[in-house]
Length: 175
Image 1 (cartoon, rainbow, N blue to C red):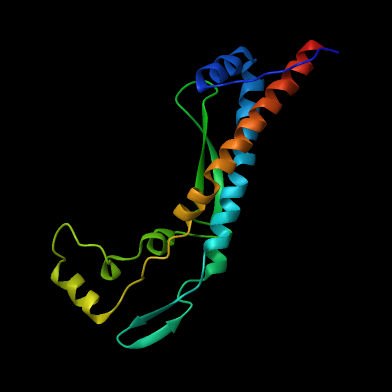
Image 2: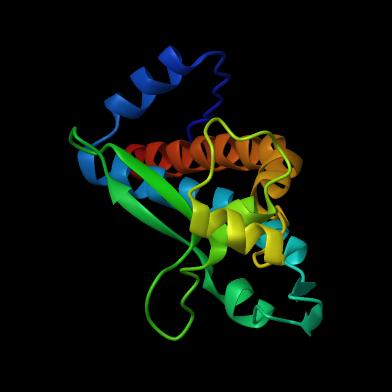
C-alpha cells in the first residue's frame, strides 16, 4: 500500500492539491470539511442564546423571545461559489419553516431604541419616543462571541478534514 503524507503550509499549496483531485472528489472533500467545521460554531452559538427580561413602559416582560426557537434555527447551508467546485458555508439562524430565527439580528445587535453607542444621526421623532418609553431589546450578542471563541477550532477541523479527504481520495485512486 502506498504511504501518503502531506504537510501543507499556506493556502496556495492547499488549492493546488485540491485542484489536482477529480472534480467530484474535490467537491465532496470541501463540503464535508465545511459541514464538520461548522458544527462547533453552531453548538457554541446555541449555548450562548439566552432568554432575558425587558421593560416597556415600566412593566417587566419575561422571555419575550422564545430562545428554543432561536437555538433550533441555528444551522448551516453549503452554497456553490462562482467557480466550479467552489463552495462556502453560510452559518447562522435559518429563516422560515418551523424554526424561524428571523428576529436573531435584534437579539444579536439590539434594537435602535436600546442602543448604548452614540448614534451617527438623530432618531426620527417616533423612534425617539419609543426609546424614551423604554421599548426595544438590549444587545445580547450570541453569534459573534461564539465565532471568536470557536474560530481556531473551526480552522483546525476544516484543515484536518481537508487533509483526511485528500488522503482518502488519494488512497482510493491508487488502489
